[in-house]
Length: 88
Image 1: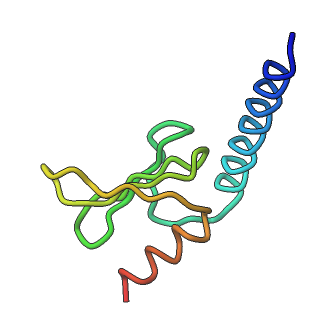
Image 2: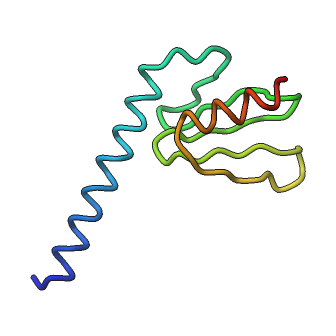
């Protein structure tokens, strides 16, 4: 296959490795208060609103019920900082 096909396969393989690493890091962490719905979807309450987290992609959403929640992206440390600021 051409160079573009090889590049695409390499990018996909790298993305898969990063997702597996983020998921492994989340499982190894002691995160109290989280409900694990599936291996890829976790949630908890934050300020009376549901906080959804997908550790493998690094995305989380938080917002009011019935209104489209805000989506965020970052590392697990970013999520924990997000939570800490709203619990103060």
